[in-house]
Image (tube, rainbow, N blue to C red; front, side, top):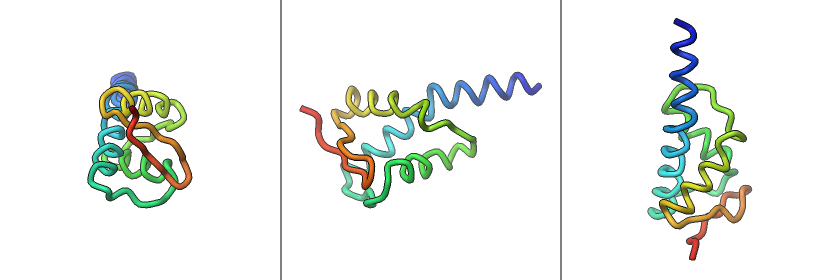
Length: 87
């Protein structure tokens, strides 16, 4: 049974969490409602909904890639977080 939950957790972290965090950041940017705190704070807030432990260093590059490709956005500063349109 533990193997099932480990696989489930890994799949969520690899495929769902990066998409959800990218959406969270893009939606917050578009609505101009992201606070001026560190990127990690925003990521942790988005991860809280899943109630799982997640290695943010492992998924950060995927989040940036999704932001760039899907939302045409890029992170230009982590602390405080600054996002800009990617042209």
